[in-house]
Length: 126
Image 1: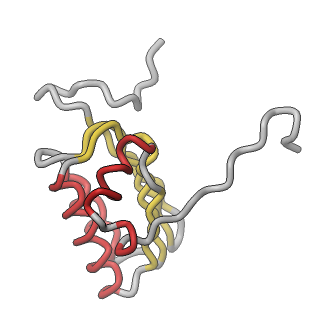
Image 2: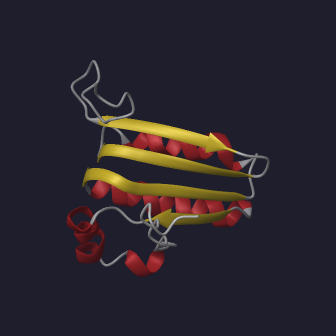
């Protein structure tokens, strides 16, 4: 059975899904699929919808399969907007093939990228 949160094509044929998890003063937005001209406004809307109600916001991009310049522009724009609003924004980088776009664009230093510690295997977890 397929995972309902997989980035399967929607009615328009786009491969895109955003999940939001909120707590009292923090939120995680997890983006899956293709971050491009068609989907970047949806990511921005998700961030904007949370900016006034949280102090910490994490964009989790580990499940992106593609990103174009519109996605890069959105990340830069939301980084600036969060800073202006006093929201601590962090971005979990996309997979290496997608992150390469950020590197080639020279924007990695302008984004609050964070690395997550790996999850221990079943034998190490307690």
